[in-house]
Image 1: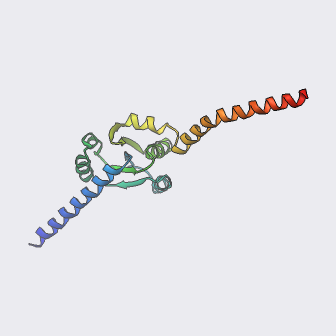
Image 2: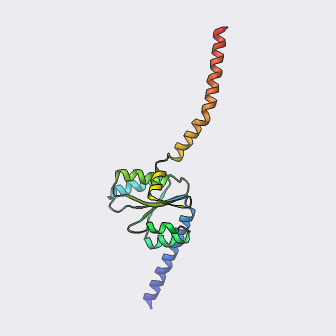
Image 3: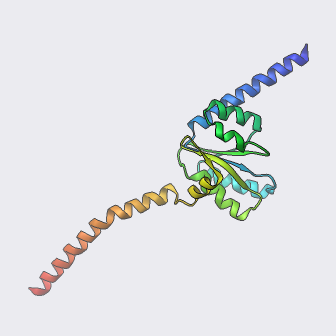
Length: 171
């Protein structure tokens, strides 16, 4: 009788975890699934610190829970990535951050392997995640946009200054 209650409690706990990760997957702007097996403790600590600083949540979760959560969140194609050890990076704001941090870290730590991901609700392959990782960060894109917007104003100001200086020298 007591074994039945333990199993019932375990099942309830797993169902609760599935619901938690279903919500995380549904709310995330981007998700990256990776295999971090073989990282040293120091490497794992550094990776988690970099992800935390980028506003990314990083969890190692049982594949069975992740598969069920992905199916409930409508991300059936992602279930294939949940084989072997799986770590999942969730970002609710910056779409590029998880892919960028993990891809950059994987260059130094060959034991870290990106498996797949989700970008704004679309299941993406390892190659697509790598391509997204090569994009500039959100701040980089905003600074590029700002410089493009400032260029015409700067050019007009320089032209006005040149005309004013020419008139001063002529007078």
